[in-house]
Length: 329
Image 1 (cartoon, rainbow, N blue to C red):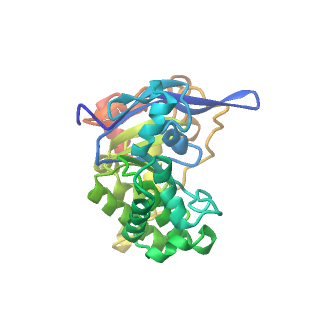
Image 2: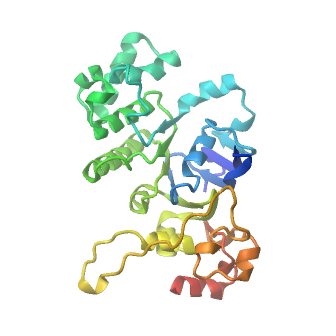
Image 3: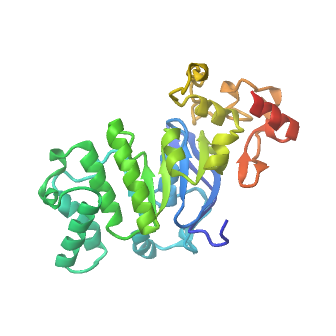
C-alpha cells in the first residue's frame, strides 16, 4: 500500500433528519485508494453506497471525518478551490437518461463541462468531444442526437464520455450497468476496464452485483446500514469471506455448475434491512444473522484484523479458532 494514496477517507459519517428523527446513512467509514486501482462498494439497497460516493465528491457534506484527495484536504477546501479540483473527480450515474438534459444534444452535454472549466477553444472542445464519442464506441454523428433518441447502452456510453471529458483521476461509478440489459452490461464493463488501463483511471465502483465487482475491483468494501462490515483485497474476500453478511451475499450469486455434483440451492438473506432511522443495538446485522447471540445483540463489534489488508467487524473473528469455525460453515 502506497504511503501517498490518491484518496484517503478517515472516519466519515453522515446523518439526515427525516420526520424529526436521525437517519444514520454512513457511520465511521475509512479507506484508502491508490491511483489506477478500483475499490468496489457492495451491499443491499439502502446500505449507503451511493451516499458514500457523493460524500467523497463533496456533493454531500459529511457530519464528521476527513477526505484527502491527491494530498489535499477536501473537508477544509473552499468552494472556489473545490470547483477547480472537480475536474479530477467525476461520476457516472446509474440512470444515464436522468443525468442528461433532454434539451441538450449529446455533443453539447459532453462539451458542457469543458466549457464550464474554460478548457480550450470551441473548436478544440468539439474535436475532443468527437474523439471521446468514438473512444466509447459511438459514431461521431450521434453528437447531434437528443437523449430520448438513444438506447440505454448508448446513453451510458455518453455518460462515460462526459465523465472522461475533463481527464479526471477519479471516477465514481454509481451502479453504471444495473439499468442495462445483460449483454450491454458486459460491453460497458469491458469498456470501463479498458479505459482504466488506457488512462490510469481510479474507480470507486458501486454495485449490488458481486460478480461484476469481483471482475473490476482490486479491493472490496462490504457495507451494511452505512457501516463497512468487511474489507479486503478482492481475491481474498471471495476466497475467505469472514463476516456472515458477506458470506450470504456470496452464496446468493447465481453460478452455473460445471458438474451435477456442483449444483447448489440459491441462498437468500433472511429478513429485511432494519430501518436506519432506528438501527438495532449491538451488531446491526444481528437480527438477520444465524450466529447471533446475546453478546452480538448488546455490544457493537469493532473491525478486527483477519489477515494482511483484510478486516471484518464481527465478534466471531476475534479468536483464530472462531475464524476457522466461521469459514467452515
